[in-house]
Image (cartoon, rainbow, N blue to C red):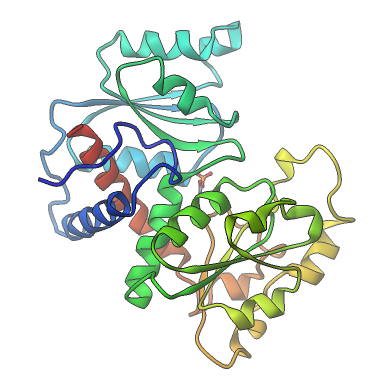
Length: 306
Ligand code: CP
């Protein structure tokens, strides 16, 4: 049986091309499973997984929980609000207490970049990064690649534009690594203030013109403005952002070839995307969510073999 080169999924940066391929191929088998009348397999029957979320989440948290249940794992859920973290307990103490209850794997979302890396150096259980601050969101990038494969047949050779708040986005960085490792070309697009200064060192094209980005790409992956991570004003108003960077269905319809519209969610309707664009035939946003369960099943299944 093929195995991953890593014991933890901390980011895409430290995965090999083979790792990515293996995860996506395994996810394809699990997608068949979750579309059967009986959606459950016994693969992780004796494994207990804790979903430890220090930041809000809808998609990632539910998707991991469903993936774990479809694999027959035992699942416990922890959220910082309402926990003893509020009484001053450290991250490591919190996780060590969870592990003392015989938990085998930790899926963690945390506001601090590097928090899952810190944990993985200090605990025996496998760690899965479900988003660490502005750093990485590896399972989102994997499910995005899976969704591109589903729609366009392959990721290699495709042009993907990531449009929006690149500066504060963990989805952008994981996607850049994941797409490039598979042979796609990547462009980032947004206002100068929301594009990291040295991003071209990652080998991506940079544009500040959303129409140029849409005309260039096969896939537009649109990101929201992460106001919760912004301590200063990066642009005058959401209305002005929307005027210059918001994408409408009309803009997509007027392109001279098909385009695939993606968004990791949550969408701020009327800011980065109008509702008619988000709900149009160009959009695969809900397919991404469906594929997330299969991809997370693959990640958990493969890590449990390590
Ligand atoms: N895409 C994503 O990470 O969404 P949530 O924040 O709802 O998990």
